[in-house]
Length: 438
Image (cartoon, rainbow, N blue to C red; front, side):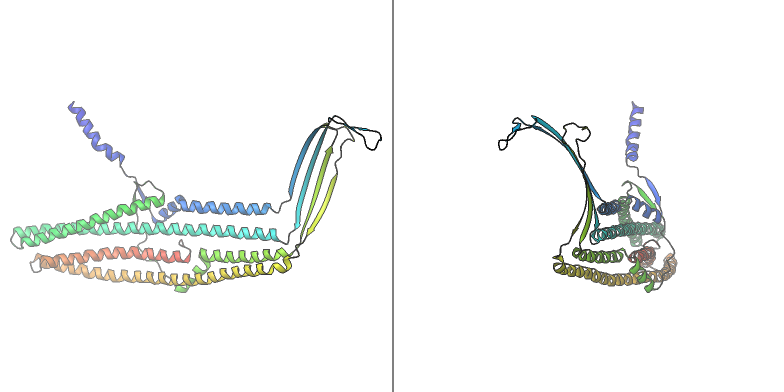
């Protein structure tokens, strides 16, 4: 019984660990982007819209094909009164019943419709290109969302590393203060100050760990991974990216931004729409052929010379002459709509320029912050060494020692955050050009 109790207790401890074990997945930034794109539900929805636009285009193309229809009719008649006498002449005797088979087949083709079919196909093709650009834009948005979350997790992990180093350092300082207290060199108050500092840093570590769990979960969802997956990330890129002149990014954005390209396509659609409206004033021409099969013999396969099969050929021309004077206002309305698209592009172009400039300046500021923080770390390190020596020789107080260490600890965290912010600022600049992967 004792052995069974031990085994049961052992299982009680290990089963929860098995059930809640987390998968660990190592991912570089590019691998995370690829995974996010692959599993994105929004991107799949965008692709579905592209396929829908292609289906619409194919349906419009079908309108240019000839139309054809066929029908076959069987008719049976019962004639109870089958004798007919007119004007006292010889009576006409009809059969008591009759059967007839009648079939028709027709083919029609629109030869000329003022170009409306051609314009409809061109307009639909342009709209399918708009849908593709919308999918490309969503792909850029998904990539940036992954990058943003990845850098957030990187910032937390870098902060935790610095916090761990600081905890290790403060633990060493606390042990030293306790030895000094035992030797009568420092007061109990000094020991308490180091213990308070240790508690504060531990609280900071707890908050950082809580943030890590939240961001890790969000990234799991974004990448389509199991929610219990523990993501191990790599340094996105320690080296600062070289930056070109502002004008080069503006030129790239004006030629690559999906929204601007969509407006260019919408402008072409508006132009096609004007041509289509003008086509309302033109005549339409169509041709057709009809085949008739008339079999009054009552037999499905009639005897020779007891059925007829006439064939007719025809052409028709129609022209709504009233459109010549009623269509001009429709053309004016179509041109106003095109002008609106042009104005929207001008407005968006200005917004893109200001966005590019803002992101460009932020990246430069981020690079400058890194240089300043690197200098401040060197100064804080030197100050920390100096205060450590003074405290050891009982020249500096515990407060001075803790302040020096806190400054160094904060400078290190600020530098790691600044590096991550610079990396994200660079990708934000690329995103505003419409080409996040360059």
